[in-house]
Length: 245
Image 1: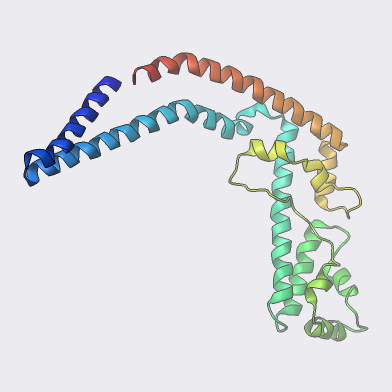
Image 2: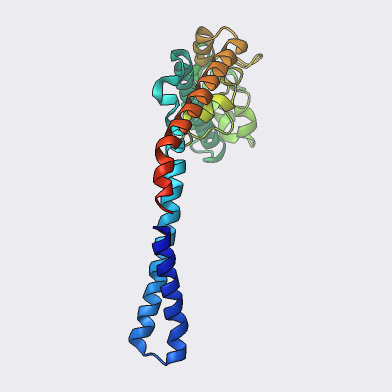
């Protein structure tokens, strides 16, 4: 197949070089240009085909390794908790942003929404507890303070917060997310106020070491299975790649 492609390339080159020398007309010119486009297109298809044959299965394995059952049941549950944790963190951060930037008219309403959201994830927190942190003896005085304060963001920073996991992207593969970050340390960080996610994580893994041990086993499985898959794939696909030549 490669020899046929080279013959076509030589024919297209000869056609292009002979157009100017022989004084050929428009038909011969467009025929020569057509050969050039055909050669370029076929060359591109050859390259794409080879890349897909070699890289395709590797990418499929890499992105499907977590869902394929190689991770332990605990590790998969840990991922689900982390996913909920990040979504909850994003929701709280958006409400905090609204409270700080939507204007004074909506500030009390946004504060109540933020308190209700935080209360879903911190059992010891509620809207009443949130209002208890606002200066003022009566509810009207507290609401008046919220409307008039010049730096609402600084005030809201005193509320319990879910910090999320920096750098997470749910479009990337589960494999990289599980192995790149210490989820236990991110969700159940020492010294931070406990959320509902802290208890869920510690129920699965009593310590960060137990989580990292599970991750190491998962990595070892992935590397060994990946190596075996690549070897077997090469045995069957290498002859097919040689057909291009």
